[in-house]
Image 1 (cartoon, rainbow, N blue to C red):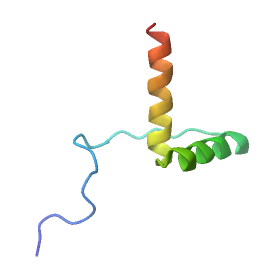
Image 2 (image 1 turned 60 degrees about the vertical axis):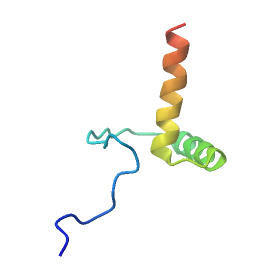
Image 3 (image 1 turned 30 degrees about the vertical axis):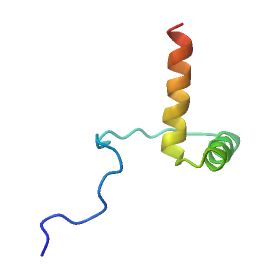
Length: 59
């Protein structure tokens, strides 16, 4: 048997930290809408949004 089981990580750095947030129904729908349009996961969509905000702050 293989010593490792499960799905391998998609990126070079595995995500080990968790963050739980509370959203309104509309906020959740907005994230899901953006995820579908960008063809990304909800997590990747949120991370992309954080990157855009960070770039704006650093201007």
